[in-house]
Image 1 (cartoon, rainbow, N blue to C red):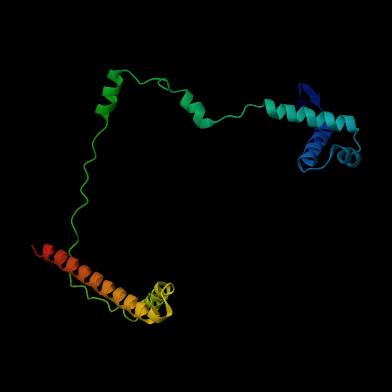
Image 2: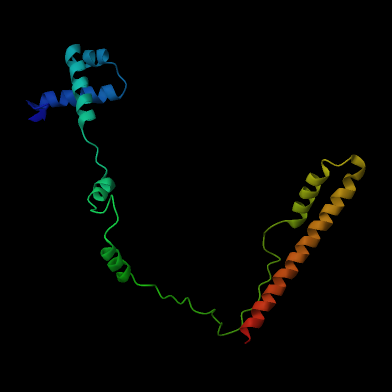
Length: 175
């Protein structure tokens, strides 16, 4: 026996109620449900109305909000004395991440030239074609070659900067 709206309902009736609600939630009209389940149309509409009303009345709980509402300081700050105790109970974190590791043996540099990676020549050509697309036909070749040369210079400058930084870092380790 089940209870629906304060009344005891036998298992057969409860199964009919569940079936009606499933079919209704699936988008089937009450008339078709009545015909398929051999239940009076008025009873089908009554079941749908009762269950819809019960679902609306059911309170939806938000666990986080329920816990937050139990906090006695939810609308105001705690007293100064309690705040002071809370601050005193917190400890500052003393962290030392350590120093850079010095390897026990020399590490050989790796030749990466044979690895797959960025095709700088192709990228330079694409950038040059983009740059020369708005230039007049007479100047297109000049703009393309200037763009390629500029990109090579910038790449070489960047390589030099990285080498200088690497040397500075290596010098710092020799102290």
